[in-house]
Image 1: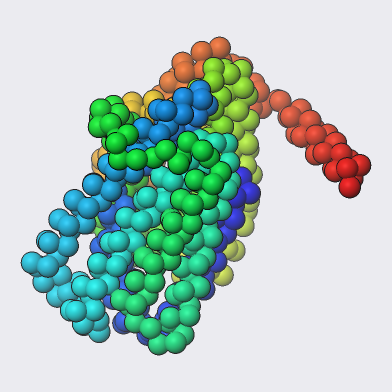
Image 2: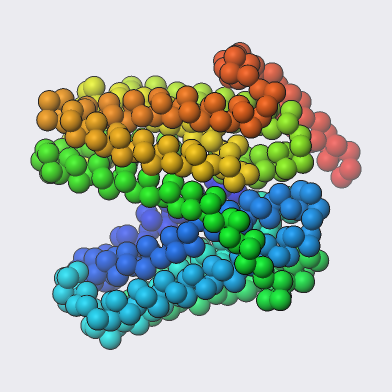
Length: 454
């Protein structure tokens, strides 16, 4: 959790500093064109079609069962498959861009055509290297060193940011920054590779001769389901904005976007818990420790739901003041819209946390389809209610769908956990806080042991 929290804090810090820095040295127009160019290759992050997460899950299962021969095959096949997919998509993307007037379509004038081409090539290489490094971090997760893998990626991002600052301050242009990103990410990937080979003996056996394409074919179903999750999220994020713009006014778009940003802050914080508990679920279920998996599921749901409930209560009380100072009085927490959006967030965090049990062992195909259908259904219901109810109609659609997903996901999670029952889960979430006292006692005992040893 600490490693994920550091990663989130690093992302926030980079965003807070880079925006005013680039605006100051590059100017609004040049910075805007850089953002437009950066957006194009960012879609290539989906080119792995979900294989990174699917292979990382299977690596964790194989290592938990000490099937290191299969781990070698999985990692060799995963790296090769993602490399081929990335090469195919980047080649296709660049071929299309080189034949269309994308600079004219995007309104790029300050960055020359030659500089744009160099920038896009470097950024595409950067995205491909990001995918490979993300897969390699799955090795640390499989070896129960998840935090180390996350810190490697965070350190690489910080190095990229420092390179950005140095180049921009010294007069660097877009293509130079893009090239620096690719070089730094490549160095980070190479360093992780050397560290993995030093730490884990089975990684040294990686070789193209161990690539087995049937292994990848067997992972296509869960991999595509990860892609479905991404598409469903994109439908919610972009579809809702397009719907409001079509049926209401740009002012409503601003109001909805500002309120959604506050809600998303809660979801990102909850993500620290779910991403941290994910590898532990994989190990527990792969090793057959059902009782441990049940306890993890209960504690994760309890922690995220109570945290979300507290954050919602705080935003209900202070949301108006936060919005007033943040938007300089331009946006107010419109009711009942704000309360409905907060309720949808509470329901979302509940089912999303429970779904981690299924995601952790690549059994999330059904949940992904339900999420996609639910997202489209929420937009359809919102389209019907928006003209009469305004923005509250769209929020109502998401509340209905998230409530349905709570029921769907919990049924599947409890089926996976076998011995767990709905009544036991809900009762534990509401009444069982003894683990907190046990955690404190464990912490005090650990501190005392360290003092004695020193």
